[in-house]
Length: 296
Image 1 (tube, rainbow, N blue to C red):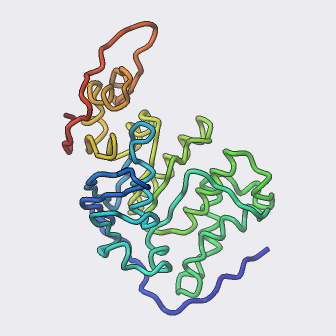
Image 2 (cartoon, one colour):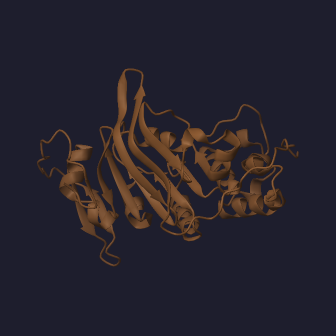
Image 3 (cartoon, rainbow, N blue to C red):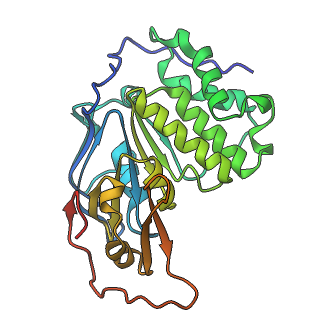
């Protein structure tokens, strides 16, 4: 089945940002959900050519921050910019050309074939001069995520991990310069977790800005250029994982004693929970101090 996409008027297409360019920014960002302030004054810059990992315990505000950066969740205060403009100033079709979003769960009510689900990622480009790239973009995304072999299968018949990879393929086919991925490895086995993070690195090397929510600190340390550690709706620390993944800070943030050790061959930080009856006191600070580049 081929899905006909409506043609749209002429729009300004995004250009590839220079490496290191601030492609998305949050300044003084506050978000409320009901009576609760979930994000309390976030400042964050997302740069082209970089993988930024958002890490932190459950409820820290990682997914909320990702949704606010995408423009899908309104801010109660502060500002979010994408490609130099406040996110609310972009019309939805133009915003879709600039950022693609992978939510935590991928569900569909209708049994679309996998190939058509991936092709949905090309909808923002319908009627533009880049629509001719649809076939190549879809094929490349399916090959990268290893889902081409079941292109004709209904999406509803897939396993959870297969659905997650198809959903990622849709995002990759969109070819927006900003990728916002919410826990893309949660449903995946070891091999495919590594595959997804290698894709993130490849997209950053090609010039995209990549933001990925991760629970696995080992993956963040191995693949991210920067990590922002969230705690109670604030950024506790932001910088290269080798600098900011420090045992005392992570123990306070996660309320779980951890050790941070260098990998014996690569030197990449390994975050290891303290186990086997070992007792390491957790500092009693309510909230780590906010500093950028180095842990408090």
